[in-house]
Length: 471
Image (cartoon, rainbow, N blue to C red):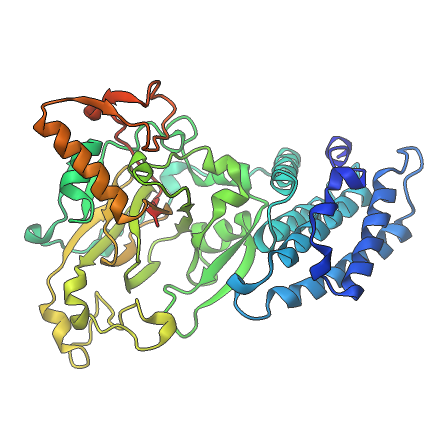
């Protein structure tokens, strides 16, 4: 652990605590924080031959826990979006100090490694990014150490992965209601014929992802890369259930308790920004180029990981979505916004975009109009991507263990209209190349983004289910 401990900042300048807006902190927490920083620096700079007494580490831990409890209360006062970032920043710093203390308590063994990595992850989940992703980097190194030191590395054969010969869980699809499938549409085709017009299944767009190839995602791979990491999960088959709740657990425990041999009902790692917390996984996927058509830089890429039978109730999102299936398969049913009145949305403000109807077991006595609402459906398989226009109602049920990435992308509609008109004008002039100076193109293999053929633009997506939506 010595090499990890040595990476921690050991000076005030290195910590960059001067970036914290201390004017927004209460005098009591500011005084406690300054004491913790002083004690932390003393701990970092203690010579290896004379480590600090464990009593000093225990005393510092007590101060750290007091600070974390105080900041926790501030984080849970009002809505999360209204919390001042200074409290999240403070939580990250104190979590960093806690991590170092646990590593110093027992440098030469893995006794406190689990506590250290848990402190890192709590700082990442509840806090703000600090020191160029320092917590994430340290957590990754600790996870690697824990994996290497494990005496009983759990392997998992792919053919054991919920083979669930359960064909009975697959619904009978109406061939007249199937969602259209398009193989790797060009950017031009997507702009003019698909975007904002209709949902489609895109194939052939994820084949080159590391998650589909040399780093193919599996339970064994997830254990190795993130097994000891703490993540938030949802408990219950769907979020509209009365018994639905949330909890924190390690990826290993989640796999053991909810994926391999479910012992605690349904559990789901859903709608979570896992790739911000664990960048190694983010490197295994590639955001579809369709998401870079606009001017907005904010693309939200989330993760869905769960067993067969987890459900996303019928609901809609305000953004464009790409749902890319990396592992497993899902049954999906879609309804147009025009039939919203027949879908019986909840009246509560928090669930206004969610239907009251159980799609596959509807109560027609209470919801009579639902039976006449037209829909389209599909089974989304590994390696395929589903594009959803804004406000399209969608219902999703996992047919097997699956991993997905919800991603929000695209920019304002005006950007689409502008780019589409450029393409139309080019077609009228029978040109195949044009200046894209003002359009953001992301793919690294496009060597000259200012001039290229439309049909040469990248045609791909994600697999493990990735939703890409841009706002």
